[in-house]
Image (tube, rainbow over all chains, first blue to last red):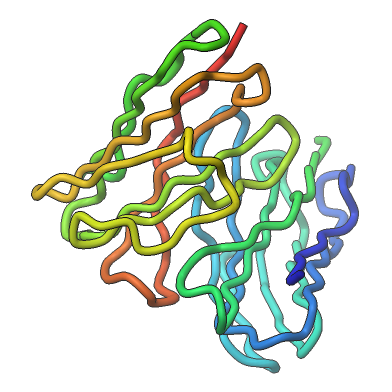
Length: 111
Length: 114
């Protein structure tokens, strides 16, 4: 079964302390990989879509990269307002347009 | 430009009851997908509606059913509620079925089954 695994489950950073979140997936025909941000009690908010290995996207302090087996979400000099759950989701070639989500990484940035 | 709107935002039901959740997609979107998100988990795909038909379905029992109206809005119905149906139900809209375009999510409907 196609799976998406995120690590770590939770991450605590000090403000300004850069780090990376990981999303790995079973290799079986990736059509697209998505990163979403979710605040407590809210719906996921779209961040990035990556389609092919080597692709990179940036938005403010966030940078997403993609290899053949995994994606990283790099957070540079985070601020407390970056605290949220970050979700990775994949669309497979055999799954139409349905998203298969990972469990998420809960990020807390302390001032 | 209104985004995806869902109603109700919160509701409490008892086991065995039935519930209907509603979703209006983002302006210009014609495809609606429903996801179930249990506490501390990632969202799980329930089904997708396009052109008023169910196009794809996830691993959910027949107790979960839906409908899409000519104005692209959608309903999710759950019959014979179980305690395990307690979750945040998310509606997502997009343009065109079968693509990998960006999905816009609503704020969700929080269902508690007692």
